[in-house]
Length: 294
Image 1 (cartoon, rainbow, N blue to C red):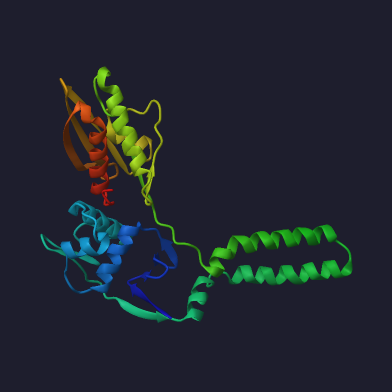
Image 2 (cartoon, rainbow, N blue to C red; image 1 turned 30 degrees about the vertical axis):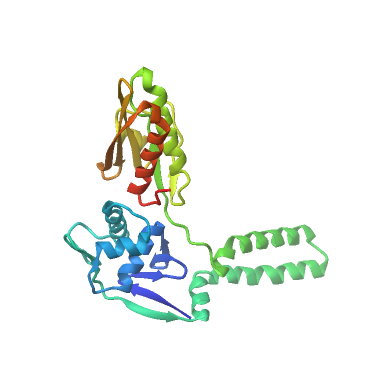
């Protein structure tokens, strides 16, 4: 037996880590789902931003903007429009509160199986027709080729429906990132390429992140256009400047769908400390999207 939450036409299963609506699973990132669970556990109460950050990111230091992004993700999943606050209310400068009425339902093992198989009655009926037909054909000694074909179709259908019967792993939507070439003088092009490649490698190690491969011909001077052509959610880019042995790197993170800058930073370093500069940029970029600063 386990507890699931129901509100409006949504259901949240903490064990399966799944948000669904009308029986259809709705993909969420791991951090968005954790944020939702904390709010549901404290529904009707104000949860401070600090408490949410501590609960979702635990010992990892992240920017408050990461929490804002998860709240925005949840509101989009619930279909909330700006200013509606039917589910999540923002208390400016303090935190958030889940205000929709919530029912806690205890689900037994048999009910869980029933829910998972609720849409498979037709398929089971087909299996019921397949198996006697197969047996009759084999017993009669005729139509052996047809019997083999029926057996093959039955096997394929069963394998395809295995996740329905026995539960499938919950998949979360992945943030898609693109890292563009950093603008620089011809002399410092290798420096910009090194920063870009380091960012790509670090981002590619994150579970909920997919990094788009570099594409020739994609314009890097128009960030939004490049992001849309690469079908990316977020674009990272920047510039490299050098005066004598001093480097200045400006890094920008742009949300393509909302068409706005979500994070930016400036890094100054001696040219001799170039690898340290790469690591610092990657560390702060990962921190900005809510990952450990390793």
